[in-house]
Length: 138
Image (cartoon, rainbow, N blue to C red; front, top):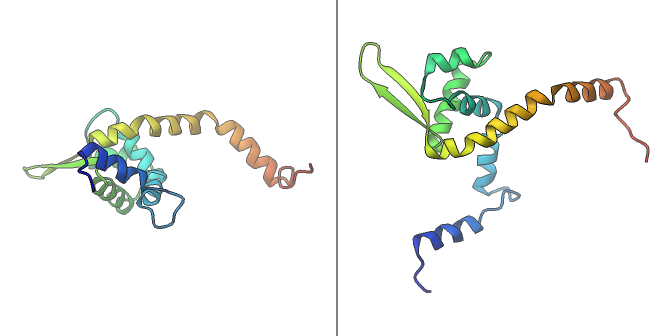
């Protein structure tokens, strides 16, 4: 087998991922970035580092447990870093990594799309719930 450069190895590894396959790790990543709290955390960190308490205030409705789980999962996936600064009390900041910043434009676009298309979605939901959208004749 011929020697491959690091770039060739990365390309060969990437070619092996297929999110349509149940065992593919890319499917797990899609699950992570498709989570509403992940999207909101990534967007909330767009302007730079934030403390846990700042994120909790910004993300209305998130429980402490869910925010902690989301932050840990994003750190594990390499999308953000957690920095602890000594003191009493200790200061903990969360910041997007280069990988997280690379994801940011996609997350912003999804958030913007959701916000700008809510009138159409609400109309479609109402029509469906009224029975007008449940079955379409062709």
